Picture (cartoon, rainbow over the protein chains, first blue to last red):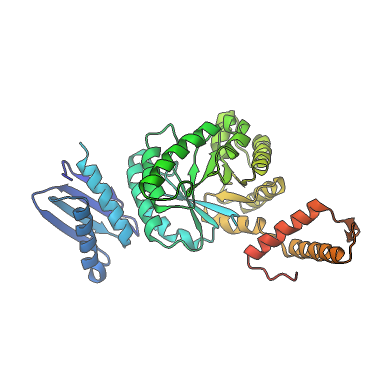
Length: 87
Length: 291
């Protein structure tokens, strides 16, 4: 899936994550999280998984996480990718 | 047993996470009115992931999708059917044909993800004047329909009347829907009480619904769940009387008696049927019964 524009998804509320995504040459992931010390690596793995599953080869992704579960992170990122790939 | 059915906004991650801990018999994850048009896509994906991943062990999961006249319902069905919620709540159902159209889309979605046809059940939301008049046809439109819910807010708007706490404006609709549902042998649930801070009003409203034959009630606030559960649960007095009825009938049969009475009143078939319903409800609630 090719990204054609910037997009956002999610919120800054507790248990949610705010995702910003934009087209880029390579994959660049930036994570800010209240649980980064405990789950930073897991969050990064989930982001990489979703991008890989959706066939995204180039994207700059920024996550502002407020304690979202893995299923929420994946949902918000999927939404952001779909929004960024709309023509 | 569905006494309370709690609406939860589908795009609120925190509420989806906590939904199973609010003591509601059912939670209705809402993709319709509680979600803005701009967030329909996000809510749909979030609810799909939540139902697929989170363990809702205390509450049954129902998902309210968007109506047929919206551009969202087909995507809702395609995303949500695959995670097999207990039921899909179908908004603004006004005739049997609406149910048939939903069935066609859901059948395709079931086939696509290898599910058995008919595994996803329907709970149509009757919230238009036409829907009320077609209530029996809706209830009996398809075997997927296992329950109906009265939606009084939209109905009042359609009727052109003000929604009141007394509920006189929906008295006819309540009666008609209960009768239609019972005739079609599907469950029927009452509309939410919308004043979050009026506990006494809620209790009275729920008691009215119960007295008409509804077996549960929807809620828009977790605050309402406990009161609704209480009203729609049999009381210990009702349970003890029902158990006594069944014991008396059993004894009469053993003694070969044709007609029996209890506390000066003849026990006939409707009383026995009601007693059996009470005992079944009590058993579901885990009440220890002396049979």
